[in-house]
Length: 424
Image (cartoon, rainbow, N blue to C red; front, side, top):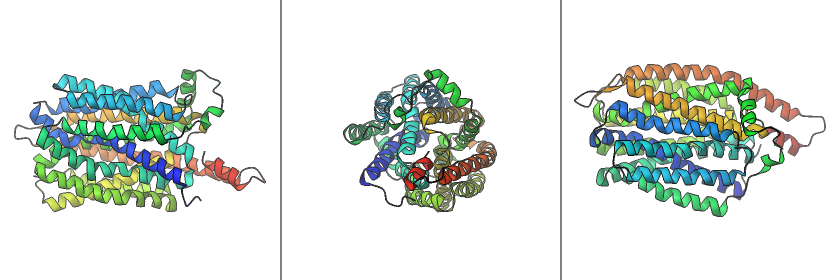
């Protein structure tokens, strides 16, 4: 098992975490801004659900279109192209003056930003063996925590002082620095190009999505996205109007939750590598389901208790994402990796868009501002979480068999050869 990363590998992990931070922040900032947008733009919960969901729908569509070409380009060039488009879309959000313009800006952001996660996953699978991907994912996924520790509190403070446009302009500045690092320091990743593509791009996608072992994974990924996309968009409005948390204290909720998630992410990644990725996924799912049921049924609640419950919930969600992504990364063969990751990310975004759209129709904001039917929303999330645990089990078994075959390999295979096979 690889125990020490090379300096360049450490740089790549840090760069991908930094990049993921900007993508995650762009999406997650919509939740805290929800209370402001509902108030300042005078839009309904249904309209806000559309603002969140159009990002996911456009990201899903672009992912499907990009899937056939994902294995035909150097990963660095593909990453830069889509990241530049993401920057443009975020800038448009920062200058939007109407609901319709904001809706269009979120579509542009999703068209480009939704593909970046799949490219990052392909890079991780290209450069790191499966035995250490848990800790790699654990570090990269600290982007979610960092967005809460640094990005969201700062974004909320900026929005309270200068309006809801300010956080998007902040993301543009941070993302520009990330883009410069990619251009200057990231090496071309092109080992997949050594395997000739005998099919045209669309035939390649068709072949990829027709394999039963991939279809199981796609189904699990779609359900995995349901929880976050359903609960997160209305999380701030629920906290402010139902739990009695002030907009000022909401910053502290995200800050405390983010600090513990930042610490817990790498620990969950190491735990997944040591005791098993599926075990950690089941543990995180069990704890998460209990917390979802409790949290979504609370009334006015002391701030300390909101922080405690929110922290445990987010750490459990983080452990699910880290372990699931590390496990899923071992499913595709190298020649299918880019297409598989693009389709997988696309379906995740599309299912998330449906979830956000459905959430906007389930919950209702009363005249007093209170969010109704959040408990009903939680029941849907609980069902999706339970189904995902069941769907992940055959994926876990298939990956275990695949790695066992790679480790035994042909007689006389060298350790480096077996390690290379295992990384597939």
